[in-house]
Length: 128
Image (cartoon, rainbow, N blue to C red; front, side, top):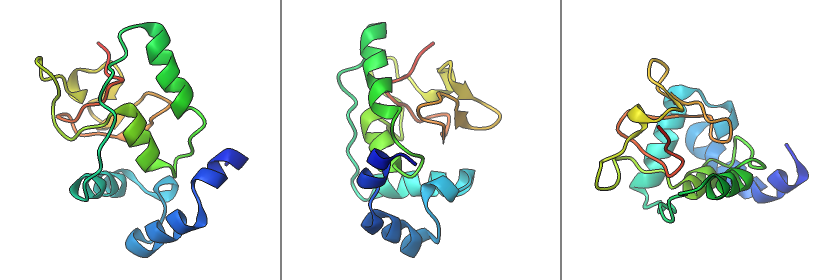
């Protein structure tokens, strides 16, 4: 983990994950990560769904924000990527139609996210 990642993912946050789940996001498997994500939204997590990146430059800028985050910085990844637990927009876009979604693994294969995802979820890094 980089120095910046260690600073952002502090001991208090680590302790909170360990007390609640017995492990941190970096140690968690698919089902536990799903549970952690769903719990954050149940507790009122709000993410940055707008602005949707219309250009490669805007998309790249979001990736640049995500790239330095560690696997333990789950909340930050969800916020920056605009993660939602339901389809989004007029077209009801969802992970299932995204080019990064691995259907059989139920996983987002975008390296900067690398998270489990249900087919009906969505994030603003959605691409076809």
